[in-house]
Image (tube, rainbow, N blue to C red; front, side, top):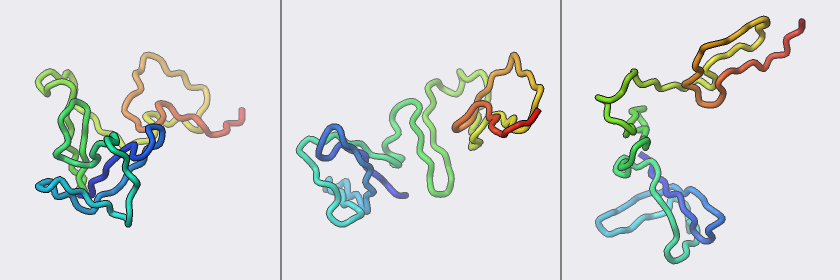
Length: 124
């Protein structure tokens, strides 16, 4: 799995994400994947990304290269009132190219970008 580090390396208004090639935690050494890496100021703010070992707070997740999702929910599973939904759809409802449609009393959920998509030019 490819670990990354997100940080404010030199200035507090400029951040970047850097891939690590190896992390040897026994000696506290991290090696940048590209030659040189960013210049790092003393006490720079940073955190690890894509590290299964870093899951320690609600709503954090990790996706392995095999596609396994590890997720820490806000509430324990016993308190859930509905089944979880994992969506890769860009739009929850695609109404492109339709006309004379009324939607009411519907909760639109579970999309990555757009709730309702209706972007085609429809001629009346």
